[in-house]
Length: 179
Image (cartoon, rainbow, N blue to C red; front, side):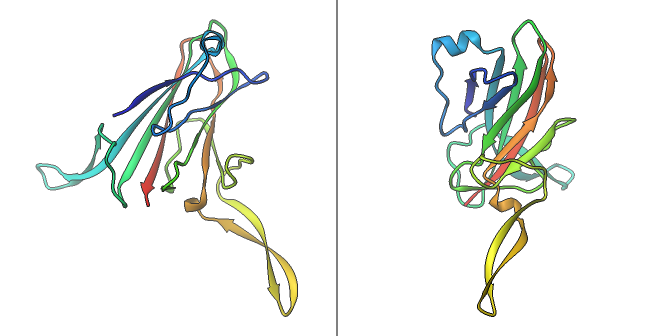
């Protein structure tokens, strides 16, 4: 398991935070470290399927996700903690879907946080299902159609945690499959 402590800089009134994936740990300056009231910790796990003594299938989270193969599933656990002295509003950490992986549908949810997704590299976010306009040619004419974006096309996941009280920690999970 790779464990990274990520501390983002404050941006505006809220605390939008981008937590880098385990393969690309974030770097922060000493000034950012001292100023940020949000502490982000990211852990990665290889998800393996096992059978219990009763023969029932279950999942095991292997803390060594350093060697993965196509088809393997990786789980990222992200925790956001308010290490400041005052409540924070509009806390919105996000994770990119790492290159060489695809988002696993029905992952990314977390308690009462609002989960949003992006298919354009994190430029825009929305609740699932996402839609986009595509232009196709029909009978020699350009026609715009609204099509649903498949979860496998998601590039980023963001959680709107709302308020985070001093000392409060919120945990989020994201799963991806290796291409």
